[in-house]
Every structure is written in C-alpha cells, then in structure tokens.
Image (cartoon, rainbow, N blue to C red; front, side, top):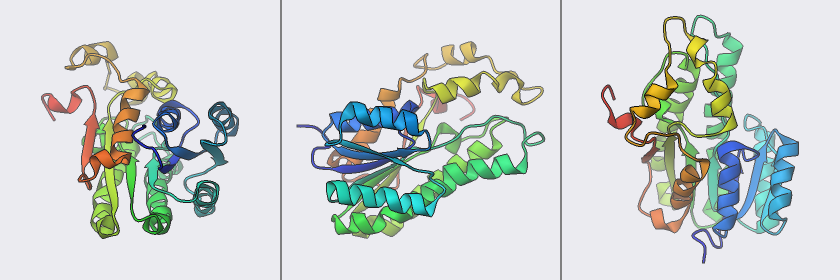
Length: 259
C-alpha cells in the first residue's frame, strides 16, 4: 500500500528538478498524476517512462488561466477526481535591485506568486466535489529571510507563504488543507545554474558556497527526493491535522545565528 493510494494529484513544473522528483515519487506512492510544464519534450519523456495509466503530461504555463483550466479538466476526465495540488513551478534569478529590469521582476512574481494563486483558485471546486483535498505550495527559505540579489524571488516566496495561510483559513471548512514547504539548497539543475552567478550578482556581496555548506548542521545540499518525501506526507492523510503551516527542509540554515 502506498501513502497516496487512490489519490489524484496535479503537479506543476514537473519536467525537471524537484518537480520531476515529485511526479515520480507520487506515482511510486500510488497516486495517479497529471503534471505540467512549458518544457514539453522533457515533460513527455518523464510521462512516457511512467505510463498513461498512472501519469499524464500537459503543456502548462502557470500564468495562464486557460492552461490551468485545461490541466484540471485533464485530471478530472482522465482519473475522475482531483485530491492534491502541488504548486511547484518556479523561476529563480539573481540580480541586484539596481540591475534587475522591471520586466524580469514582474515575470518572477507572475510565475512564482500569481501562478500559485491561480492554482489554488483553479482546484477549489474539484476538491470540494472530491470531499476535500490537500494543496502543497512550494516556497523557500527565502520566504522567511531575504538575501542580496534575490529581491524578486524573496518577494514571491514571502507571497506564497502568506497566501498559504490565507487559503488555509478560507478553505478549511471544505476539508481542503493548505501548507507550504520551504526548501533550502537542493541539488537541481536550476539551482546549480543560478548558484554559478551569485558571486557577481551584487557588487560587494561575495558568496563562499563551500564555507556556507560546512557551517550547516547538515553540511550538504538536499537531494530532490528528500523534499518529495515531505511533499508526499503533506499530500497524504498522514498530515490530516496540518494546515496553514510551514514545513522547512533546509539542513538547519534557519536555525543558525541571524535567523
């Protein structure tokens, strides 16, 4: 018996990185999954490896109301219901406030925050029809604290944290739980690509990644599966009394001095 047997989940940003890990882990735990991304070739490859009985891929721009409607319809028509939403899709960019164009700031807010809000809005009715559900919003430790070069990303992840609490208050009486997950450093391609520019993103702010990792109680970055297990717990009935809460998986970053 899997932890998610009988549940139908919609996962965003599932073509690579943490999202791909979530998709595969949810299927392994017994869920049937619809997942979306804008990386269609990668998404179809993941779906093909899991099989149509367990998994469907849809092109999904999380800033598009039409794409949200199509993704929800795919889940309910293919698998008969919708029990879980994982708002995982996100973008990460490093730039100082001085150097970041307004268009880039807005793009990050649109994908990370507006996309999350649209997702919650889109699944309320099908979850009510299913008798309840679980929404898991992927935020970040940047939803608790800021960092030089991450003004837009931090703003978006603080927003996810706040929206999670508001949604939990609104949706609890429908049996819909809403929680946020706050990873620290995770070994994904996006994180590693962006980490390579952090040292030069903001003049005067030099990041020594090796020294930072050595300072942590758990002195390494997370593997994606370590976050997926936490997300699956929140999606499952094992977390039935948890809503409006923040779940941190950061190797101890926020336990240290200055936090």
